[in-house]
Image 1 (tube, rainbow, N blue to C red):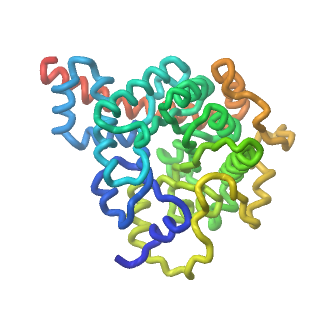
Image 2: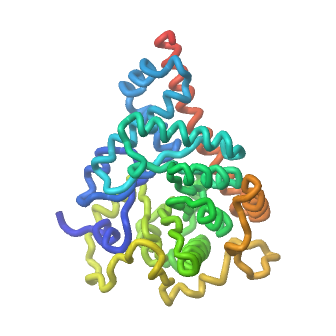
Image 3: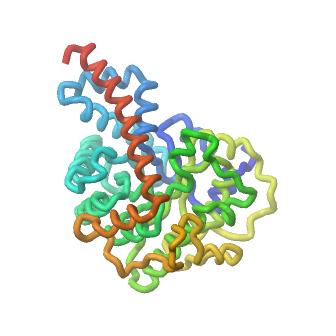
Length: 357
């Protein structure tokens, strides 16, 4: 096929898929890297596959709706592993966001189900919505060899906590969940990399990781940035320095359908890791600003000297509470994904009743 803008993006950074749609993944003319998912994606796929729902309820319905839902998440993602070079990812329930022990238990369950399905630990990771207790949970899980992705990240403090807890991946949300539900909240810029108010926070996290790597040699979380509305935003992620971008179905299709008519690339995809990371010159002014900061911000960015994971993530929860943007957006994530989970619960329990289990 003719070279598309998705090909161009893959030459600049790593294309991941924010969908469990097997046919979509097959339509990509190269092998994508990782496949991310969440309760919205899993619920949508499950409710669209009546045969799968009935079969899972028949097998696991006697153990309750949660077991059925966890099995669905594993089944809907594990089937795509042959189409990927990297990992599949599913998310712990937002019902556990305030409890490290509950988050650990759910992540262990999901990891066990993957292993029962024949998926080795190097082919999956567990997404953890990143509150203070979640960071503490991630530290335990990563030490056990259950690799995690810090998700629903809106602040540098969350990024630092992801590093301190040993996460393999991190997913800042470039746009808030609320804007997915209300299009009037969507921000439009001619130059998203330079103008979007989340761009500085993305750069703050990347630069903090690069500094920590240079100083310690410790591998830092690999950024898989998420939550975009336009092709321009997607393409801007490469300029910001994001090593991976996870893309929803409609934008994958748009990028595939858009011919690459730009001049040939003069830069190559950066090597993995942070050893050679450097913010591009035209974006360096973003390193010291924060459009989302409170009016009383003193201009100082958080750093690795504060332990955001200790005492069940006490300092991280404090930082989130003191950041109106992060606090609201993380709460919106909690409400939205619990709602999507409840939609699946209702359908599963209805089928459990229909089967007399």
